Every structure is written in structure tokens, then in C-alpha cells.
Length: 203
Image (spheres, rainbow, N blue to C red):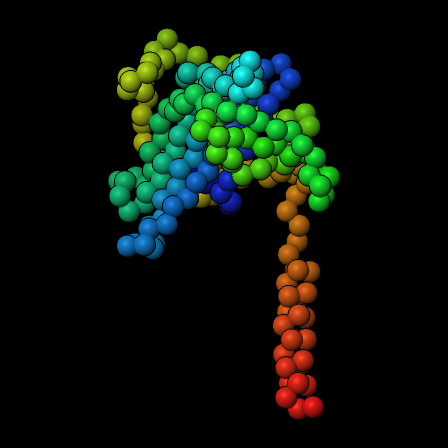
């Protein structure tokens, strides 16, 4: 496991009550700019809708994983551990975005605070199998130490087998657009503004 090119989070849901979530956060280090921190979290499990409109996500206990990177503090750059965290959303909304007509999911945390909106990328969702992937008899319990907390040193060349991973958004319904045209329009605007300024003072 290694960091993707962009930070963010993603939630996937199936009609029969399963979900999958992935987070990637990065943090700056003002005292040591060359030592940024990062954390990746992944879980999957089952969800259900409560009678009060809230959404409750219960992960499979032994499948969640977390990768915490701190290259200047950790002896092997990162620590790879089990991860388990139930999530509760006070409410949710599924709407059509007025600008581009894309399906949008609005989630509100347990305290009602809104999360960044998410837009539909795959239908049906692309998820790992909706069963326990790593069944063990020693699943961690609340407050106990995870069964496996081995450290790993990551390779930037690819995954553990030395293979370069294929882009996960190759079949996405909407992808990030090329910014070359936007850059050209910006510079054109700057040029016209400068030209207008020169004309104002000359004429």
C-alpha cells in the first residue's frame, strides 16, 4: 500500500447493505517542510438506515487497514496496522448537481457538520468482495491491541509484487479535465488586462 497522487475520500454503497470507504489525508510540517505526514485508511462492511434518518456504518472487524507515514519520525517511514472505526452520519442526501447534472451525495457527520460533497464515479460501484477478506480467530476487540501491527517499508515503484498499479479511475463516469485550456484562458485574460491598462494611460 502506498499513497495515491491526490488526497481525498470515497464512499461506495450497494443496494443490499454493503459499503466501502477509503481516506487519504496529508499534513504539512512547518518545522520540517521535507517531512510531510500522511495517513491512509480503508474499511468495508455493512450499513443500515436508522428510523431517524441517520446512516450507520459497521465495518468488518478484521479487514480495516491504516497506513501512517511520517518519514522523519518513524524508523521505516511508515506503520501499517489494522483499523476499525464505526461511522454514524446524522443524515444524508442524494441529489442531482444543478451545474453538470451529476449525481451528488451529501453526508452529514454525527454532529450534523456537512462533509465535502461526493459525485457518482461508478455505477454499479467498484468494490472489493462484500465479505470478510481476512478471517481470523483473533479479531481485535474494543480497547484491545490489534493482532498484527507489523511495520512495512513501501516501494515507490509499485506494489509488493513489483507491479505498477493500473489507474483506478480508468472507467469512471467523470474524470478530472485537462487544465491546459483553462491556463490558456487565464493568460489571455492577463494579457488583455495589461493591454487595456497600457491603452488607458496612452490614450
